[in-house]
Structures are given as structure tokens and as C-alpha cells.
Image: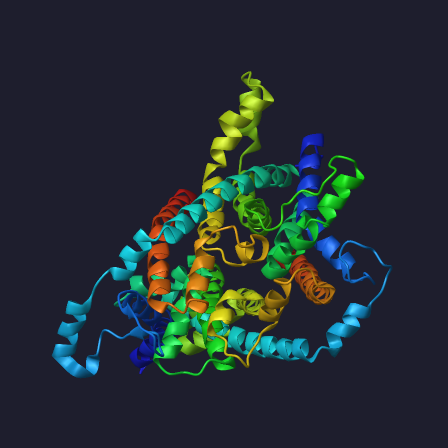
Length: 299
Length: 272
């Protein structure tokens, strides 16, 4: 009786995830290896299980990497991958530059201020991502808040074109993912023993060199975690380039979406997804390893 | 330790929080703008709110969104809590590594891939796209977040309490209900809230798995935002932001009071 219950307990979430998460990926992989066809659904199915052994043999004979070689040949795709990598990397670095002073200020703040500051960082995280990205259209557009302010101050004469460029995408990513960078850095800085910095200063370090020699290296695990938490989702980002990037900014998440919905080329869209996953595996494994190391160090 | 703000920290915090909040404040202000143009302040008006509530398409989308969010977050909480319990308490079983992989993977997976994969599943099993497919997809990705929140609570609490209940003759189910569940309840509730918010916000996955007759609020917002700024969307955003702000502040006040209560109880227990 007990064992039956245990089995049921394990199997319920297991089977759910297996069916709704694992099986879909096998389907994506399968479709990425099949050929495009003008039909519904728009691909020629490869694996025909009802045909039994012959079906399986035909499946292996028919396997080709045509869609993948198509991705390698067509410059649209590899420029989209490269431009996503570039945008994700640069915006991760910019997010770090913006987030570090905030996290540092929070960690140095008087104790009674910290819960409030913490709540102020978390609040945007609960607010709709889409709304926060949308709010920048009104600021960055040609007649937007930023241009009007700058023109009113007399700094510029003609409006800056920011919306629908990659600059707008950088701003959007930094803004949307800022809490993900602040929180891990803050938690690393908060744990830092203040007497270490006092010791460094007693031993003749200036404030700046105490920061670079003591504080910064000790906050590195938080920095690494934060960078992965921004870089990984930014790489496959769809909403920000669609709303702020216009037609000129290439990002692979958007390419995948358009390939699927506008061109209706499912095999190529699936191949794009498979390659994106392969690119993401490296940072994900590095991130897991960093977390593991932190957990072991904590124990 | 009692510290004061140095001028450097005060400046960086002020600038940082201005950056975080100014766009939202501008968005809210312009929802009360009488002029349709974003650039011109035409005086205070609440007409966009009125127009929003007269727009049947928005009302329908809101209904779909809340229906999906309530159902999917509730099922996701049950499945996610079970998954966390299995992961932390069920010991070793065949395929445990695969299981934990399936729980953590959706957290880092780009939404476009999740959406594409689930859509292809629904098509290949012949399930018509609609509210049901959105609910199924939302359950799947939000249950993983619930499971992470709940398992982080399960890690920290004392296993011997459960063992004591079992030793005293509880069945495993009774032990779970009367010992484990009350202790992890706050984590289960925050898991539900997280699942609810994620479902409410989700655009990309819904965009893939929704059918023509089932439009959610984020999908409606996305399609009108592509045409530029729309004061009606500002009004809608203001309503949603107010709900979230009130919710988060209430939750933090409640938890503050709970901590204070707990401390008082502990002190009382020490004294007796």
C-alpha cells in the first residue's frame, strides 16, 4: 500500500513533465530533421511507427541535416545568432555596470533601510515584463520624453533616433533584467565581513584599493551568477527586440518566431530552436557549476 | 551596526532607483493625459479608463487571462509541491536525475523554444488550440518555479520533525498533512503567487499555443503596442501596476508582522 502511494506520488509530476516537456523536445528534434512540405502540417513526417520495422529503417535512411546546413548557408541565420550573442554579451556587461553600485549601496545602507530597498528592487520583478518594456516606447521615441527633455534643456537641436535601433534593445534588456543582477550581487556583498575591509585599511590600503583587492573579489560569485541570469534569457529574448528593436535589430528569438508564424517553415524553425539550445547548454552548465560551488562553499 | 549613507552610496541608490521607477511613473502619468498624443499634456482626464472598460475585446481578454491564471497556478502549485516533495524526500529512484533536470530546465529555457515545443506537441496529438492548451502550457512551465520555491523551504527545515511524527504512528500522508504542510505553507503560497503572476504576464508561450478565439491580455497589449503608444494600454498598465504594488506591500507587511509575532512567541516560550 505504502509503495503504491509512493509510486503514485513520484509518477504524477514525473509523467506530467515527461509528456508536456520532454516529448515536445523530441518532436522538435524530429521535425528539425524532416523536410519542408506545402501541406498541413507543413512537413513530411519521418517516423512512421505503424509501419513497424520498415518505418524505423526508412526513418534512419531519411535522416538528413539539410535544415541545419541551410542554417549554415543562409547568412540571415548565422548573423542573427552572432548578433544575439553580441547583444546579450554587451547588455549583460552594461547591466553589471548599472547594478553593481546599486547593490553596493544597498549592502552599505543602514539596517533599517534594507527591507525597503529590497522591496523596491523586487517590486518591478512582479510587475509585468511587457508593460515595463512598453514604458520605454514613450520615452525613447522621436517625440518622446527623453528627446523633449534634452531639447528643452538645449542639449540637442534635432531629436535623437533611439527607438527601433539596437541602442533601444540594450536599454530595454538592462532595464528589464536589472533586478536579476542586483539581487545575487547584493546577497554576496551583504555576507561580506566588514572587518576585512577595516583590516585592509589599517594595513595601509586606500579605500579604492581595499575595494579592488577585497570587496570586488569576494563579490565575484554574485557577479558570475548575475551575469548568467541576464545573459541566458537575453540570448533568446523575443519581446524586447520586437517592441523596441524595430526591423533592423536581428535577434534569434525573433527570427525563430517569424520563421514559424510568417514563413510557416516548421522544419527550419525547429532547427533554429535546436541550435539555440546547443548554444545555451554551455552557459547553463557553467551556471549550474557556479551554483554548485557556492552551495558547497556555504556548507 | 548603525551606519549612515555615504554621499556615493546615496547618489548611486538615487540614480538606480530613478532609472528603475521613472519609466513606470511616466507611464502612469500619461494614462491620465486628456490628449491622445503622448507628447502633449492635455490636462488631467480619466477618459482612457472609461474607454478601456467599454472595450469588449479587452474585457474578454481579461476574463480569459484570469481564468487561465487561476486554474493553471492552482494545478501548478499542487504538481510543483508534489515534485518538490518527491525531489527532497522520496530518496533515490530510477530516473531521479532526469526528473530534476526536467524541473530545472524550463527555468532557463528561452520562452520561444518552450512555446514552439509545446505547440508542436499539441498539434501532433490533435488537440485544438484554445484556452485548454494555454492552461496546460502554463501549468507545465510555472510548476517548475513553484517546485523550486517549495524545495528551497524543504531543504532548510528539520527532517526530524517528520520522522518524529512517523515514529509516533502517523501514516506518511498524515505526517505530510499535519507536520510538513503547515511548515511549508508560506512557501506554497508564495509559489502560487509566483505561478499566478507568471501566467498573468506570459506573452510568448501563449502567443504560440493560443487559438484564434482565445486572446489573453498580454497578447492584446502586444498587438496594440506594435502600433505605438496607446493611452488605453497606459490605463490598463496603471491598473495592473496598482494591483501588484498593493499586493507586494501587503505581503511584506504581513510577513514583517509574522516575524515579529514569531519573535515574541519565542521570547515568551523562553520565559516560561
